[in-house]
Every structure is written in structure tokens, then in C-alpha cells.
Length: 582
Image 1 (cartoon, rainbow, N blue to C red):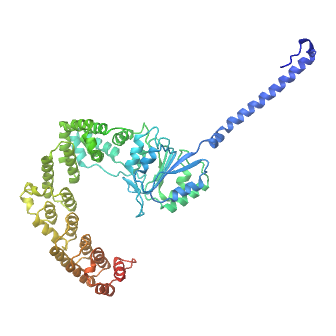
Image 2 (image 1 turned 180 degrees about the vertical axis):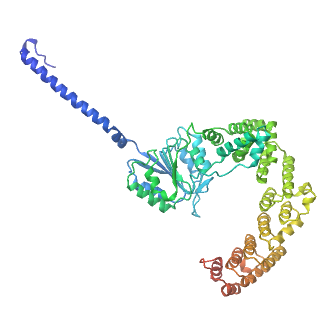
Image 3 (image 1 turned 30 degrees about the vertical axis):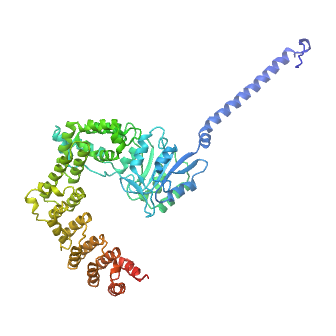
């Protein structure tokens, strides 16, 4: 129990002493209040530093498909209590980026190290490496989870690869774009202006593509031309971080870092924002790439695109082709996808515009692709597709600039010999060609007589003819021993060394086993006048079944007549070493 004092036992001080005590208490209160205000002011002053020190770790995601030097430099010099590292690449697993997305990884900083091909992927220069990073996968990750996904919290991106922020357009627009706009009713001036707008929007420079992928990221670093190799990049990063790491991950472009790489074309930019002129185009890209959309929804978006100016449809051709090719059998059997495909197939206006553009295309390969897509979208049946392709081939046979690219295209289109029976569609004049290119195109269509002429062209004195024969034989190799022997003899009569090397390299891909042909090439070795020709002969023999030749005799020929290479070891040295092995 608490004791309670009776009221009469409590004594009070006289009034003067009471007043003095009250004043003393107030002074103590005022001093306490003053100190409290000072403490609060100091706390406010110190909040930024203390808050930063107490902030949670930032996540640095690394994608290392080639050199680890950049990652290791960052890991070594960034404070472990402020930065944690997650390597997204899982060796031996092809879907490693999708795996990271499923694990709900969120990155504050992203570091990509790998060679960059300028448009499609990051890759390694190590032969044994199997990991690579398709740019399309980055688009998919960016578009599918913009608010809560892997890239939603990004403040900085580092792209350690050549040309990752190169501002030059990777593709241009040809005259067919402007002609299409005029055909649809625009004046020549309007068509010219619109063509420039479309070229700027769809040029897809590496810089534009990275800005679209990493939308709203305040700081993106990359190289406008050749990047330094990994060890050099790692060393420059170390030098930068030794001067302080406070800027890293801040989301503010570092002038000090740019200065550190000033000899290597490092540049910085920011991601596309909602107010950026490229924002609408990014929305279109995500219409194709967003995983949240079903196949039917993506096809509905394609149908919407097909309703635009055909000039713009042409610039989306790659993405439309890729989407159509990605449809599985289950997709096509689904009711919603079937309805979406039927809606496209029954759109007569879109079909008419599309086919008019295809027939006017400047590049035969583009025309062939559009014809193939029209077939897949239900705008052409099999007979219609064949008729369109043969009309294109007929026109190209009459063109003065017919060349190796046409041979490659026609042979590719007829890889299954499905067009062999269509030679009657070719005009009479074109069936009696005057050039090797014309003969090779007809040979691609299965004409045996013109195949013979094309094979003879491989041993021509004209390098252009040899190039065309080389392209043809990539698609239609020689399998007749008599033809191979004739070619081997003919190569010995070619006077120009570079043309001779080209013909020999064509034979090398055949992996010869005919002893007469191989003996003819071995006899050619002593009379070869250049190291390049001898190397090319060795290249044929290395790939061939040279066991059919006398090993000791061949070894003696090579060692006695070889020309010394100023550039170090050649294929002749490799062949000699193999022949000396027991």
C-alpha cells in the first residue's frame, strides 16, 4: 500500500521563497528548451548524411557475358555495406534473365559487360561461352513490368560494349517509303516531310534503342564507338572509384567518370520519359514485347498497326514477322487467336495497301519477305504466293544490276525446290541469259543446263563471276566427282591469285574425298606463287579426307615447296603438323 501524508503535515514555504523557487524552475526550463532547439537544428542539418548512411543497400545487378573486369572493379571498391551485387547470368541456363525476373530481383544499378553487335545482342568472344543477351529480352523485361519489375527502380545503367550508345541510325528509309505516301494521297512535300519523321522514329540507333529499353532511367552510360577491352575498362573504373564512390548509383551523370574514359568515347544519356518525342514509339515497341498481353491481344495490336500508313507498316516488318513466327500450334488452335487472324485476313483495304507496297519495294529481299508475310496472314494462298515470287524473279532477271545478292535470295526462296516447276513463268528472253548472274538465278530454280554454266564460272578469270558461283554453291553444292575434277583442274588455270583463293575456299566447304580431285590440288601446291594460294590449298586439304593421298609424299611436297609466311603460322603449318602426327 502507498502511504498518504495527511494534509496538515505538509508545510509550505513562505511566499518569497516560493516565488524564488518558481523563477529558478522557469530558468531551468528555458535553458532546457534552448538546448532542445539547438539539438533539433543540428539533427536537421545532419539528416542527409545520416539518412544516406542508414539507407538500405542498393542492388547492383551485373550481366557478365564476356569480361568480368568491370564487375570485379566495382565489387572491390564499392562499400559492401552500401552495395550488394547480384550476377544475373546463370551459366548453362538459357533462360537466365527470365529466371531472375521470376525471382523478383530488383536492380538499382545495372552493369552489362559484353561485345555488342550494334542491334540484336550482347555476346562473348570466348568460343566455349554459351551465354548471350538478346536485346529483345531486355525489351521484354522492360515492357512487361514497368512499375514493379527488375528495372523499375533503376537509377543507373552501364553498358560496357562497343557502340552501345552510338547515335547513328542502324537502318534508313528507301524511296519506296515516300512513293507509298504519295500513292496514299499525300503531296510530294508532305510525303518528304513524313518520310523524315518516320526515318527519325524508326531509325533505331543503338542509343535510341537503349533509351527506350531503360525508360525513365536518369543516367545511362555507354560508348558511342569502340569501347575499351575489359582489363582497360576495369583499370579506368578502379582509378575513378579510388577518387571516391559517392557518385555511384546516385542517378546523376558523373562528369568525373566521363573524364576518366575521355579517350574511349564514353557518353551518358537518360531514358525516354513520358514527354519525350520517342515515347509513342516506345509504346508501339511494348505492344509487341509486353508479356502481359496474350497472343490474341498482340495480334489485335498488329491489326491496328496494319491500318496505319503502309510506309510505317514496312518499318515494323521485322517485329510483325517475329510475332507471327512466335505463335505456337496451341496459340493458333485457340479461338481468340483464330478470330484475330481472321480479322486480319478479311481486311481487304489493309491487304490492298500492303501488296501495292510490296510490289513497289526497292529491295527484292523486302518484297519477298512481304509476300511471305502476306501468305502467313491469309492474304495470299499458296498459288498466289508463288505467282508473286515468280513475278519478282522475272523482273529481277531483266534488271541491269542483277548480282550475287539476287542469286542468294532466289536460292534461299527455292531451298526446298518448291519453285522448280515454275520456270515456265519466266519470260522467254530471260530464259536465255547473257550473264553468269542470270544463269545462276535460273540454276537456283532447278535448270540443269544453267547449273553447268554456273559451275564453269567458278574457274573464270573474272572475279565477279567466281563470286556469283561461290554464292550459288553455298546453296547447291557439287556432288558429282566429274564436276569436282573439272573445277580442280580449272582452278589451276586462274591467273589472278585472289580469284584463285576464292575458288579454292569454295571447294573447301565441300569436304572432298575424291582422290583424283585432291591429287590435282596437291599438284597445284608447288606452282602456287603466293602464300595465300598455298594456304587456301592447305585449307581444302585439312577439311578433306587427305588420308586417300600418300601421307609421306604430301608431307614432302608441302615442306619442300612451301612459301614462308610473314604473318606467323599459316594453314600450311597446321597441315604439316597433322601429317607428322602418328
